[in-house]
Image 1 (cartoon, rainbow, N blue to C red):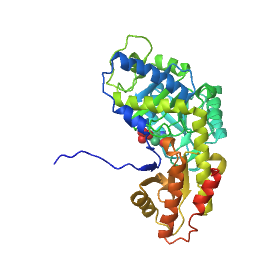
Image 2 (cartoon, rainbow, N blue to C red):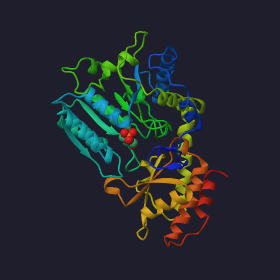
Image 3 (tube, rainbow, N blue to C red):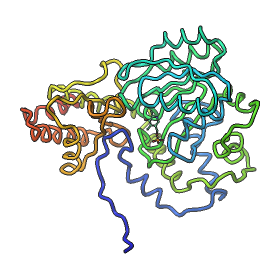
Image 4 (cartoon, protein in one colour):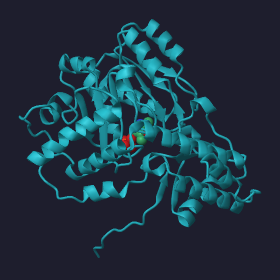
Length: 392
Ligand SMILES: *Cc1c(COP(=O)(O)O)cnc(C)c1O
Protein backbone atom coordinates (compact mmCIF):
# COMPACT_ATOMS: atom_id res chain seq x y z
CA UNK A 1 0.00 0.00 0.00
CA UNK A 2 1.28 3.48 -0.83
CA UNK A 3 0.67 6.21 1.72
CA UNK A 4 1.76 9.81 2.11
CA UNK A 5 4.09 10.64 4.97
CA UNK A 6 2.97 13.23 7.50
CA UNK A 7 5.27 13.13 10.52
CA UNK A 8 4.18 15.19 13.52
CA UNK A 9 6.23 18.25 14.29
CA UNK A 10 8.68 18.05 17.19
CA UNK A 11 10.64 20.48 19.31
CA UNK A 12 14.16 19.73 18.14
CA UNK A 13 16.62 20.30 20.98
CA UNK A 14 19.31 17.82 20.03
CA UNK A 15 22.62 18.39 18.22
CA UNK A 16 20.81 19.19 14.93
CA UNK A 17 18.64 19.42 12.97
CA UNK A 18 17.00 22.31 14.80
CA UNK A 19 13.44 23.62 14.46
CA UNK A 20 12.78 24.91 10.94
CA UNK A 21 10.86 28.19 10.60
CA UNK A 22 7.51 27.89 8.73
CA UNK A 23 8.73 30.55 6.29
CA UNK A 24 11.65 28.29 5.32
CA UNK A 25 9.33 25.33 4.73
CA UNK A 26 6.96 27.56 2.73
CA UNK A 27 9.84 28.82 0.57
CA UNK A 28 10.80 25.24 -0.20
CA UNK A 29 7.30 24.56 -1.54
CA UNK A 30 7.85 27.08 -4.37
CA UNK A 31 7.90 25.81 -7.97
CA UNK A 32 11.03 23.96 -8.99
CA UNK A 33 12.82 25.70 -11.86
CA UNK A 34 15.98 24.67 -13.63
CA UNK A 35 19.44 25.23 -12.20
CA UNK A 36 20.23 27.64 -15.10
CA UNK A 37 16.92 29.55 -15.00
CA UNK A 38 17.63 33.33 -15.01
CA UNK A 39 15.52 33.84 -11.90
CA UNK A 40 17.36 31.08 -10.13
CA UNK A 41 20.70 32.59 -11.09
CA UNK A 42 19.62 35.89 -9.50
CA UNK A 43 18.77 34.00 -6.35
CA UNK A 44 22.20 32.33 -6.38
CA UNK A 45 23.89 35.75 -6.33
CA UNK A 46 21.73 36.90 -3.39
CA UNK A 47 22.46 33.68 -1.60
CA UNK A 48 26.22 34.19 -1.90
CA UNK A 49 25.89 37.76 -0.57
CA UNK A 50 23.85 36.61 2.41
CA UNK A 51 26.33 33.81 3.13
CA UNK A 52 29.11 36.42 3.18
CA UNK A 53 27.11 38.23 5.85
CA UNK A 54 26.68 35.04 7.87
CA UNK A 55 30.41 34.27 7.62
CA UNK A 56 31.36 37.96 8.13
CA UNK A 57 33.59 37.89 5.08
CA UNK A 58 34.29 39.50 1.73
CA UNK A 59 35.65 36.23 0.34
CA UNK A 60 34.58 35.83 -3.27
CA UNK A 61 34.51 32.05 -3.05
CA UNK A 62 31.57 31.76 -0.64
CA UNK A 63 29.01 29.20 -1.77
CA UNK A 64 26.53 26.60 -0.54
CA UNK A 65 27.73 23.07 -1.36
CA UNK A 66 25.20 20.38 -2.26
CA UNK A 67 25.32 17.94 0.61
CA UNK A 68 25.48 17.78 4.40
CA UNK A 69 28.22 19.49 6.41
CA UNK A 70 30.37 16.39 5.95
CA UNK A 71 30.66 17.42 2.29
CA UNK A 72 31.95 20.81 3.42
CA UNK A 73 34.56 19.10 5.57
CA UNK A 74 35.66 16.71 2.84
CA UNK A 75 35.70 19.49 0.21
CA UNK A 76 38.18 21.52 2.25
CA UNK A 77 40.53 18.57 2.54
CA UNK A 78 40.30 17.16 -0.99
CA UNK A 79 40.76 20.60 -2.53
CA UNK A 80 43.52 22.04 -0.34
CA UNK A 81 45.50 18.95 0.64
CA UNK A 82 47.53 16.72 -1.68
CA UNK A 83 49.09 13.31 -1.06
CA UNK A 84 52.22 13.59 1.12
CA UNK A 85 51.20 16.99 2.56
CA UNK A 86 51.35 17.35 6.32
CA UNK A 87 48.32 18.59 8.27
CA UNK A 88 48.09 19.35 11.98
CA UNK A 89 44.71 18.04 13.13
CA UNK A 90 43.43 19.13 16.52
CA UNK A 91 41.18 16.63 18.21
CA UNK A 92 39.14 17.34 21.34
CA UNK A 93 36.00 15.40 20.40
CA UNK A 94 34.34 13.27 17.73
CA UNK A 95 34.60 15.62 14.77
CA UNK A 96 38.36 16.13 14.95
CA UNK A 97 38.59 12.35 14.43
CA UNK A 98 36.72 12.69 11.16
CA UNK A 99 39.19 15.36 10.02
CA UNK A 100 42.00 12.90 10.62
CA UNK A 101 40.17 10.29 8.50
CA UNK A 102 39.87 12.80 5.68
CA UNK A 103 43.57 13.67 5.76
CA UNK A 104 44.71 10.03 5.86
CA UNK A 105 42.39 8.90 3.07
CA UNK A 106 44.01 11.49 0.80
CA UNK A 107 47.40 9.89 1.55
CA UNK A 108 48.57 12.93 3.51
CA UNK A 109 50.08 12.84 6.99
CA UNK A 110 48.00 13.88 10.00
CA UNK A 111 49.99 15.19 12.97
CA UNK A 112 47.58 14.96 15.89
CA UNK A 113 47.24 17.56 18.65
CA UNK A 114 44.89 16.10 21.22
CA UNK A 115 43.02 17.55 24.14
CA UNK A 116 40.56 15.87 26.48
CA UNK A 117 36.91 15.62 25.43
CA UNK A 118 35.26 18.54 27.22
CA UNK A 119 38.30 20.84 26.96
CA UNK A 120 39.11 23.38 24.22
CA UNK A 121 42.03 22.99 21.82
CA UNK A 122 45.18 24.26 23.55
CA UNK A 123 46.78 26.91 21.26
CA UNK A 124 50.18 26.35 22.89
CA UNK A 125 50.15 22.70 21.75
CA UNK A 126 49.33 23.85 18.20
CA UNK A 127 52.22 26.28 18.31
CA UNK A 128 54.59 23.58 19.58
CA UNK A 129 53.45 21.14 16.90
CA UNK A 130 54.13 23.77 14.23
CA UNK A 131 57.63 24.37 15.61
CA UNK A 132 58.37 20.65 15.31
CA UNK A 133 56.74 20.47 11.87
CA UNK A 134 57.68 23.64 9.93
CA UNK A 135 56.64 21.97 6.65
CA UNK A 136 52.97 21.85 7.73
CA UNK A 137 50.50 22.73 4.95
CA UNK A 138 47.43 23.34 7.12
CA UNK A 139 46.07 23.39 10.66
CA UNK A 140 42.58 21.92 11.00
CA UNK A 141 40.34 22.27 14.05
CA UNK A 142 36.72 22.36 15.16
CA UNK A 143 35.55 25.74 16.44
CA UNK A 144 32.38 24.39 18.08
CA UNK A 145 32.70 20.71 19.09
CA UNK A 146 29.14 19.43 18.98
CA UNK A 147 30.12 16.16 20.65
CA UNK A 148 31.21 17.93 23.84
CA UNK A 149 29.75 21.47 23.78
CA UNK A 150 33.17 23.15 23.82
CA UNK A 151 34.22 26.30 22.02
CA UNK A 152 37.86 26.71 21.00
CA UNK A 153 39.71 29.99 20.45
CA UNK A 154 39.54 30.23 16.65
CA UNK A 155 41.11 33.70 16.41
CA UNK A 156 44.26 32.57 18.21
CA UNK A 157 44.61 29.22 16.42
CA UNK A 158 44.13 30.82 12.98
CA UNK A 159 46.75 33.46 13.84
CA UNK A 160 49.25 30.79 14.92
CA UNK A 161 48.69 28.89 11.66
CA UNK A 162 49.18 32.05 9.63
CA UNK A 163 52.40 33.05 11.42
CA UNK A 164 53.76 29.64 10.43
CA UNK A 165 52.65 29.89 6.79
CA UNK A 166 50.05 27.18 7.21
CA UNK A 167 46.46 27.38 6.03
CA UNK A 168 43.68 27.16 8.61
CA UNK A 169 40.72 24.81 8.03
CA UNK A 170 37.93 25.48 10.51
CA UNK A 171 34.77 23.50 11.25
CA UNK A 172 32.08 26.08 12.09
CA UNK A 173 29.15 23.72 11.56
CA UNK A 174 27.56 24.37 14.93
CA UNK A 175 28.86 27.90 15.51
CA UNK A 176 27.71 29.70 12.34
CA UNK A 177 24.83 32.09 13.22
CA UNK A 178 24.83 30.91 16.86
CA UNK A 179 28.05 32.53 18.08
CA UNK A 180 30.54 34.84 16.36
CA UNK A 181 32.24 33.36 13.28
CA UNK A 182 34.49 36.19 12.10
CA UNK A 183 36.12 34.80 8.97
CA UNK A 184 37.93 37.97 7.87
CA UNK A 185 38.89 39.15 11.33
CA UNK A 186 40.34 35.73 12.13
CA UNK A 187 41.98 35.63 8.66
CA UNK A 188 40.75 32.04 8.44
CA UNK A 189 41.43 30.28 5.14
CA UNK A 190 38.70 27.67 4.82
CA UNK A 191 35.51 27.50 6.85
CA UNK A 192 32.61 25.13 6.30
CA UNK A 193 29.27 24.85 8.01
CA UNK A 194 25.89 23.11 7.79
CA UNK A 195 22.35 24.30 7.07
CA UNK A 196 20.59 22.40 9.88
CA UNK A 197 22.21 23.77 13.03
CA UNK A 198 22.02 27.48 13.95
CA UNK A 199 20.88 28.44 10.45
CA UNK A 200 17.75 26.36 11.11
CA UNK A 201 17.26 25.25 7.54
CA UNK A 202 16.60 21.67 6.49
CA UNK A 203 19.68 19.39 6.39
CA UNK A 204 21.64 18.81 3.19
CA UNK A 205 23.43 22.09 2.35
CA UNK A 206 26.94 23.01 3.43
CA UNK A 207 27.98 26.68 3.30
CA UNK A 208 31.68 27.14 2.53
CA UNK A 209 34.04 30.11 2.32
CA UNK A 210 37.67 30.20 1.15
CA UNK A 211 40.16 33.05 1.52
CA UNK A 212 42.04 34.35 -1.56
CA UNK A 213 45.11 32.58 -0.16
CA UNK A 214 43.26 29.26 -0.11
CA UNK A 215 41.94 29.91 -3.64
CA UNK A 216 45.55 30.35 -4.80
CA UNK A 217 46.44 26.97 -3.32
CA UNK A 218 43.41 25.46 -5.04
CA UNK A 219 44.31 26.97 -8.42
CA UNK A 220 47.95 25.87 -8.22
CA UNK A 221 47.57 22.24 -7.24
CA UNK A 222 50.23 19.87 -8.53
CA UNK A 223 47.66 17.24 -9.36
CA UNK A 224 43.89 17.21 -9.78
CA UNK A 225 42.08 16.28 -6.56
CA UNK A 226 40.65 12.77 -6.29
CA UNK A 227 37.01 13.95 -6.15
CA UNK A 228 35.33 15.13 -9.33
CA UNK A 229 32.10 16.04 -7.52
CA UNK A 230 33.83 18.21 -4.91
CA UNK A 231 36.35 19.83 -7.26
CA UNK A 232 35.90 23.54 -6.46
CA UNK A 233 37.74 24.54 -9.64
CA UNK A 234 34.95 22.90 -11.64
CA UNK A 235 32.17 24.01 -9.29
CA UNK A 236 33.14 27.66 -9.68
CA UNK A 237 32.15 27.48 -13.35
CA UNK A 238 28.61 27.13 -12.03
CA UNK A 239 28.72 29.28 -8.88
CA UNK A 240 31.31 31.87 -10.02
CA UNK A 241 30.67 35.47 -11.01
CA UNK A 242 29.63 36.49 -14.52
CA UNK A 243 27.01 35.28 -16.94
CA UNK A 244 28.69 32.24 -18.46
CA UNK A 245 27.52 29.65 -16.02
CA UNK A 246 27.87 26.05 -16.96
CA UNK A 247 26.36 22.90 -15.62
CA UNK A 248 28.37 20.86 -13.14
CA UNK A 249 25.70 18.99 -11.19
CA UNK A 250 22.02 19.77 -10.71
CA UNK A 251 21.75 22.05 -7.69
CA UNK A 252 19.20 21.09 -5.00
CA UNK A 253 16.88 23.90 -6.14
CA UNK A 254 14.19 23.79 -3.45
CA UNK A 255 16.65 23.27 -0.61
CA UNK A 256 18.45 26.40 -1.77
CA UNK A 257 15.15 28.34 -1.65
CA UNK A 258 14.99 27.21 1.97
CA UNK A 259 18.52 28.33 2.77
CA UNK A 260 17.82 31.66 1.07
CA UNK A 261 14.85 32.18 3.37
CA UNK A 262 16.70 31.19 6.52
CA UNK A 263 19.48 33.66 5.64
CA UNK A 264 16.80 36.30 5.02
CA UNK A 265 15.47 35.63 8.52
CA UNK A 266 19.01 36.00 9.88
CA UNK A 267 19.42 39.35 8.12
CA UNK A 268 16.07 40.57 9.41
CA UNK A 269 17.03 39.70 12.96
CA UNK A 270 20.61 40.96 12.63
CA UNK A 271 23.44 38.54 13.27
CA UNK A 272 24.56 40.21 16.53
CA UNK A 273 21.01 39.85 17.84
CA UNK A 274 21.02 36.18 16.87
CA UNK A 275 24.27 35.64 18.80
CA UNK A 276 22.77 37.47 21.78
CA UNK A 277 19.58 35.38 21.65
CA UNK A 278 21.60 32.16 21.78
CA UNK A 279 23.53 33.47 24.82
CA UNK A 280 20.37 34.56 26.66
CA UNK A 281 18.66 31.21 26.09
CA UNK A 282 21.77 29.36 27.21
CA UNK A 283 21.85 31.45 30.38
CA UNK A 284 18.19 30.67 31.13
CA UNK A 285 18.85 26.96 30.55
CA UNK A 286 21.90 27.11 32.80
CA UNK A 287 19.96 28.60 35.69
CA UNK A 288 17.29 25.92 35.26
CA UNK A 289 19.84 23.10 35.18
CA UNK A 290 21.61 24.43 38.27
CA UNK A 291 18.28 24.66 40.12
CA UNK A 292 17.95 20.90 39.53
CA UNK A 293 21.44 20.34 40.97
CA UNK A 294 22.63 18.93 37.65
CA UNK A 295 26.06 19.84 36.28
CA UNK A 296 27.63 20.71 32.94
CA UNK A 297 30.49 18.69 31.45
CA UNK A 298 32.30 21.83 30.30
CA UNK A 299 33.84 24.65 32.39
CA UNK A 300 31.74 27.80 32.26
CA UNK A 301 34.08 29.90 30.10
CA UNK A 302 34.50 27.22 27.42
CA UNK A 303 30.80 26.41 26.93
CA UNK A 304 28.99 26.78 23.66
CA UNK A 305 25.64 28.50 24.18
CA UNK A 306 24.03 26.43 21.44
CA UNK A 307 25.11 22.95 22.62
CA UNK A 308 24.85 22.06 26.27
CA UNK A 309 26.28 18.79 27.60
CA UNK A 310 24.66 17.89 30.91
CA UNK A 311 26.03 15.10 33.09
CA UNK A 312 23.58 12.29 33.81
CA UNK A 313 22.99 11.55 37.51
CA UNK A 314 24.09 8.03 38.56
CA UNK A 315 20.70 6.49 39.27
CA UNK A 316 19.06 7.74 36.05
CA UNK A 317 18.43 5.70 32.90
CA UNK A 318 19.39 8.28 30.29
CA UNK A 319 17.66 6.62 27.33
CA UNK A 320 14.37 6.38 29.25
CA UNK A 321 14.50 10.11 29.94
CA UNK A 322 15.02 10.87 26.26
CA UNK A 323 12.18 8.63 25.11
CA UNK A 324 9.90 10.04 27.83
CA UNK A 325 10.58 13.58 26.60
CA UNK A 326 9.92 12.50 23.02
CA UNK A 327 6.69 10.63 23.69
CA UNK A 328 5.16 12.90 26.35
CA UNK A 329 6.51 16.30 25.30
CA UNK A 330 7.26 15.85 21.62
CA UNK A 331 10.73 17.11 22.43
CA UNK A 332 13.98 15.65 21.19
CA UNK A 333 17.30 15.89 23.02
CA UNK A 334 20.56 14.20 22.02
CA UNK A 335 22.48 11.32 23.56
CA UNK A 336 26.22 11.39 24.21
CA UNK A 337 28.49 10.64 21.26
CA UNK A 338 31.58 8.40 21.26
CA UNK A 339 33.21 8.12 24.68
CA UNK A 340 30.48 10.31 26.20
CA UNK A 341 27.74 7.84 25.24
CA UNK A 342 25.63 7.18 28.35
CA UNK A 343 27.39 9.96 30.29
CA UNK A 344 25.74 13.15 29.02
CA UNK A 345 22.69 14.53 27.30
CA UNK A 346 23.28 17.03 24.53
CA UNK A 347 20.76 19.86 24.65
CA UNK A 348 20.73 21.92 21.46
CA UNK A 349 19.63 25.52 21.67
CA UNK A 350 20.20 26.25 18.01
CA UNK A 351 18.63 28.70 15.59
CA UNK A 352 14.83 28.68 15.79
CA UNK A 353 15.06 26.24 18.70
CA UNK A 354 16.76 28.97 20.76
CA UNK A 355 13.56 30.41 22.13
CA UNK A 356 11.91 30.84 25.51
CA UNK A 357 9.05 28.41 24.86
CA UNK A 358 11.49 25.57 24.18
CA UNK A 359 13.61 26.26 27.27
CA UNK A 360 10.56 26.28 29.54
CA UNK A 361 9.08 23.18 27.93
CA UNK A 362 12.37 21.30 28.18
CA UNK A 363 12.92 22.15 31.85
CA UNK A 364 9.39 21.25 32.88
CA UNK A 365 9.59 18.01 30.87
CA UNK A 366 12.95 17.19 32.44
CA UNK A 367 11.59 17.77 35.96
CA UNK A 368 8.76 15.40 35.17
CA UNK A 369 11.04 12.77 33.61
CA UNK A 370 13.55 12.88 36.48
CA UNK A 371 10.78 12.52 39.04
CA UNK A 372 9.57 9.43 37.16
CA UNK A 373 13.14 8.14 37.51
CA UNK A 374 12.81 8.38 41.29
CA UNK A 375 14.75 11.59 41.86
CA UNK A 376 13.38 14.00 44.44
CA UNK A 377 12.57 17.07 42.41
CA UNK A 378 11.28 20.39 43.65
CA UNK A 379 8.73 20.82 40.89
CA UNK A 380 8.73 24.17 39.15
CA UNK A 381 12.03 25.40 40.57
CA UNK A 382 14.03 25.06 37.37
CA UNK A 383 11.29 26.70 35.32
CA UNK A 384 11.14 29.54 37.81
CA UNK A 385 14.94 29.96 37.73
CA UNK A 386 14.91 30.14 33.92
CA UNK A 387 12.05 32.64 33.89
CA UNK A 388 13.89 34.83 36.36
CA UNK A 389 17.00 34.70 34.17
CA UNK A 390 14.84 35.76 31.21
CA UNK A 391 13.47 38.66 33.23
CA UNK A 392 9.88 37.45 33.28
C1 LIG B 1 26.85 18.15 12.62
C2 LIG B 1 28.31 18.34 12.48
C3 LIG B 1 29.02 17.85 11.37
C4 LIG B 1 28.42 17.00 10.29
O1 LIG B 1 27.26 17.51 9.74
P1 LIG B 1 26.38 16.62 8.74
O2 LIG B 1 25.43 17.63 8.17
O3 LIG B 1 25.73 15.58 9.59
O4 LIG B 1 27.27 16.04 7.73
C5 LIG B 1 30.38 18.15 11.29
N1 LIG B 1 31.00 18.85 12.26
C6 LIG B 1 30.35 19.30 13.35
C7 LIG B 1 31.10 20.05 14.41
C8 LIG B 1 28.98 19.05 13.49
O5 LIG B 1 28.33 19.50 14.57
